[in-house]
Image (cartoon, rainbow, N blue to C red; front, side, top):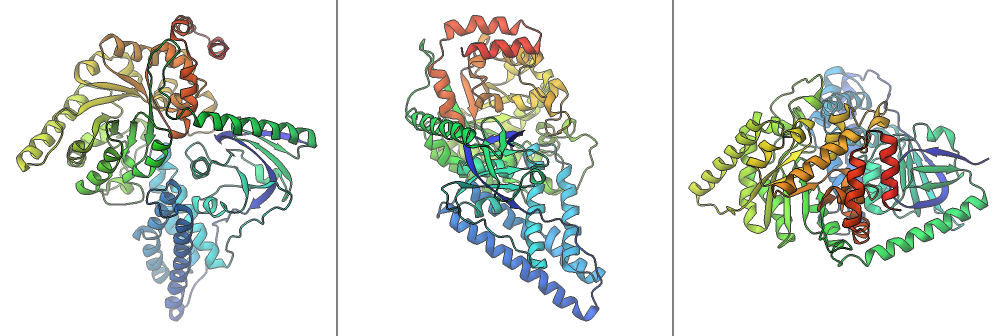
Length: 576
């Protein structure tokens, strides 16, 4: 009897195939004593296992990137290779083997738990989920130590693909399946920023995550359908349901083909209003995707990704090279680079750990940068030096106070003065903007408008802080609602204030890339959207169909509503 399970849709599309269960290596390994004379052999056993996994990862990267230096999936493999070289992990495990006279598996898992504790303190959900890299690379080493290496699923003969069902998947696992007719991924855990989600989107494979107990509910080789657009998994579908989804999949493929034709079409509404569709990126590795959809520029470059997987801060020259690569690749197009949006964590700052009872409300983003002025100054110098290679805009995250803007601008002035004294070139016209992510900022826009050249609304954090919801907490994530009347009033008020004073405003959170909200944001007056490159063409189609003269008054009526259910109904009717 078919049944349906609902999860989080993280990679669009429909997949029909047979289940392949991937075991989840439990890291509850045995602890046993090793005689002193055998300790060198135990250390060597660990060394050989690490070398085996390193070889597997290097092979996966070579097979995946095809020689391209900035592959998105290749970057995850690089990150796990970096983890293998982290002194806090393998080196410390070697020491532990000798000091405690213990087996390699146990020593490695003990060190893993210490490193994971550090990642737990990070507020940013993407960075916090990078603890999965540590766990997953250790899993690979432990499997080799125990003699249980992973295996790839067999190719199917009936024309249907294979659906990978797992508790969780590492990027290396995911990439390793790419040549085996994999139709989709389904996992117990994960969210929009999990590895399974990111790699699945990169490989354009449908995926649904956060299903909790899916591995216990399905059997090997059972027929499964994934609807990665709606977050639905159908177990044991009959032939009628299979045919229905085959038809739906064909329609989606046709739609995707039509969207590609819009690549070189200017995003202009029916009544002639131009709209800018920009890309969110993590670094130079994302440029191929940006160019593939002919984005109007970069609306958000998340520079904190330069930090991932390392103890030492990137120096000025390393940062300069990363920024320059993006600017040179997009001549004539604006590139908005956000300064480091990180929390106080040893793995990121290299200056000592700091316990925070609530990192979301602690020393993060601009607060952290101002608390570490030399780090901030180094970044600003690198940004300014790179500005001669393109149209740079610098954006400061999580502003809430006038003095934060003033101190940031003072450091920009100091960076310029130092570069002048050293005879280093920069573009004096670089504009400085700020992110509206805190309700206090959205309610006191005057101090931003008087000091900054542009604003960008980070809807992810603005919703989280407005509704007092930790969006990474599964117990309350259902309360995270972009259509809450309070959230909409803050967004609309910011857009309207920017228009009133001639200050450009963009939205760079998830709302910008969700077609369900495109008409709503256009009706509010938004003309600058920034999103994952994969969403740009779909949003462009929405823009091309929009008539602002008709939309604006309807959206103004929505903004006067104070019941979420009524707001949701009205937003759905906008597309009707």
